[in-house]
Image (cartoon, rainbow, N blue to C red; front, side, top):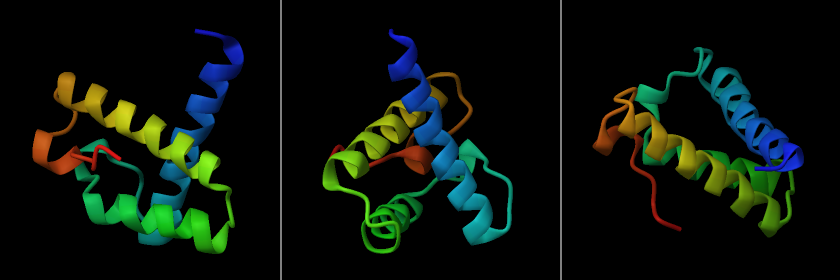
Length: 86
């Protein structure tokens, strides 16, 4: 794993966590991620932030990987952190 890849991964997760806090006024909690949050964040990235599709896809991939990890370590339940495969 290269430093730049890891930094991008952490930045992408941080961006989602910051969006959650700004949008809901609550600290980020992996156990509370639901598909509707992910869809809303995707829409925010595309329409408000005007991110390119490649950037949106990268950010969603990072979040998907994080959610798989959170389920594996029991920080989130399968149905709660479940993300669309793509």
